[in-house]
Length: 51
Image (tube, rainbow, N blue to C red):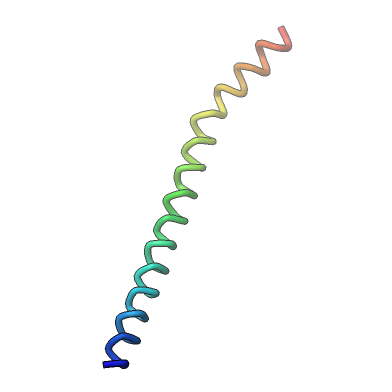
């Protein structure tokens, strides 16, 4: 019975690691996406300030 609990716990940890890795890549992708979208906006602000 104890072995089964350990197995289940190990599976849960492995699952958590997988989802954490997925969340990490998702967050990374979202930040890149955000930077890509905001870059033109920053350029506009810079040109607006200089004029």
